[in-house]
Length: 359
Image (cartoon, rainbow, N blue to C red; front, side):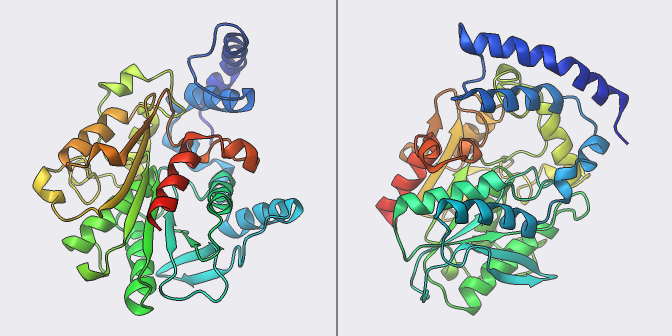
């Protein structure tokens, strides 16, 4: 059932869209978007998402879209464009322990070939978006590395499955890929909530977390990791960049609060490292993070202060950090409509350079 407050917000939305459109074509909008389509989407998200109720989000039709449907839609587009990667959409694992699909699998792949294990964002609440799949395909195309494979984890979503359900599935798939099959050239990559699970998985590999049932010996840790706008604090407070960037980001404090409570309702548990890496100290990260690491964020994100604080806590070298000027949350999944538009983005440039330099 859609709340009356949500309907009222929808009624007020057109005037805000019109105002921001006028700013965009005159003095410039406070949302730093490259095109009017992205601007309108960002303004609408910012306007609505700070006030929605949990019940409004659970009922959103996008939550019901399956990974098979999303893969089929993107496959159709890529086929038409003539850029369908090898084995796109092929299932790697489909069981109660987890589901995963190849976005691209190198022909005659060997255990020494590089594999990017991708964990998608979406607040732990939403499934993989088509824009995320397109971003991965564009990055692979730009790298021109026919030995590189990309594997997507289709983990279970909250609130139907609470922590540690999703991270247990991620750990199981990683274990199968690395420990059981002997793949030795694994790279973790995750955006937003997926970035959170990348960090938690790295911590678990180094120092086993009781809530995660699959133990992974430390010698099997990945070669490198890419963290894109990682969401690191699931007990947010309306301070700092949550207030400073409240009208410049696609997401809002209210949205993060709802996502957090849906991932797990226990506030005290959400203030611990297995859920919120932000609540940690420097000693927690000694020997945890790989030497080849890229951390990306946006200057205009509401969570940027928490990201920068965690970078300090974990003693991550500043050369591994990229903060996009006026960047919003998770711009990795924006501007993906065409390869030409995406390759001009900050995320594409940073990620492809990192992988070219290190693979």
